[in-house]
Image 1: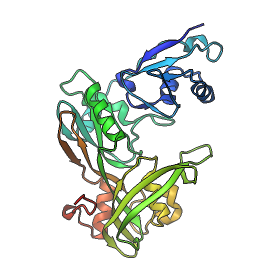
Image 2 (image 1 turned 30 degrees about the vertical axis):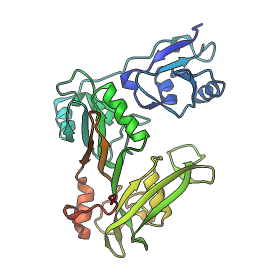
Image 3 (image 1 turned 30 degrees about the horizontal axis):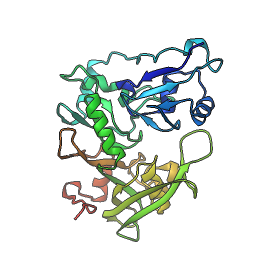
Image 4 (image 1 turned 60 degrees about the vertical axis):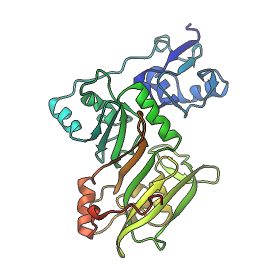
Length: 329
């Protein structure tokens, strides 16, 4: 029987949830078993008690208790190596075409809509599996420091070393980043700008991930402002999230009565426009301003994905004339 293990979090496991780390390295351990181990304090990070949904970072030490009969003997081993595949020349060229900015610390890419950030059930292609294309002159594989939903496009930051990735991840955690999203929503909000504050949590049902408003949920907050409008069909909103809950912007817009165009999950049939407007989700991470690991504040902007650019053109919106209505004065 394997005794207590203290396993150092590898660079490739930086900024993943603890439960997903266990799923990757101890796949036979069930979710319920892990939660029980966490509640009893058997699993610890750098000596501290931890919950299964908390994130872990490169260099931290995970205390893994004796497994005993909880998992088969073959699962009681050191973490498995990442199973990487060789990328084709076409894949490498495609991924490098997404690059918006690159230096020796940071890479910013324009994530395409419809491509997941990390792998999961039914996800054979994802950003995390394509990062070897972005090594360039470095021996290290760049690291994810935050995520975007599969159907959301736009700015995604990568750290080119363990230290830069940790610095960038910390900036997201401490809310030192200033993110601006663009959304096309159904209808036109009555107020030109405002703040949405809701308590939200995961719906207590199995299946596709979905968030709901609940009194016992975590606080979420988003500022919004109308940039342009095409009444009564749609409005172009600038969105500034102050928290980073799953599907926050999608749920907030839907609860406001103006679901994001293409968001059938939260807006149902009301989330789609008639005519030739795309049925894809119209949510885009337009700009991220962040503290650069070497000092100073840097801002990266991503152009609209093709389906949103086409929709904006059809509605008469002019992205080139944009002035941020939520900029701090």
